[in-house]
Length: 163
Image (tube, rainbow, N blue to C red; front, side, top):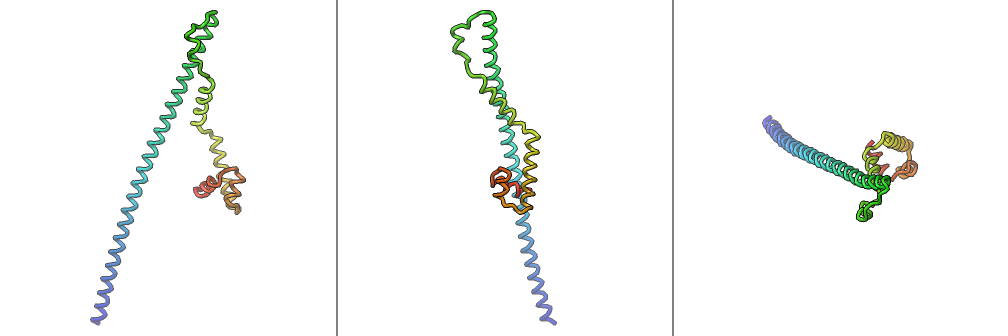
């Protein structure tokens, strides 16, 4: 009986040792998880700050293009008013401000249209996504789906991974 109690006591000590070891490992994993969550939140903040900075820079560029467009339009209006009054422009004014107006207008329209994605683009993207998922369910390979939808292989792989 004494031997049986000694064996039980030793087994109980071994069990407590393993429980303590498992608890320490769990605590280590919890620390690692909180550290990763902290890093993820810092990365989210950094990306948000970067995107905000990028948006501000784009807005500044649009204002600059609009200002430049206004500056180019005003001399043209002054020249047309002088022509109406049958006055020739002064020699010093002939070479000034003769920059092309069309490229600035095109750039401005391009930035304005690009910064505001339309609803049709989102619907088309969703349609491509749903079509890609259906084609995958039907047993199509990534290459076949990419060829069918006219998209890159990597883009299709990402669509399928992030269902």
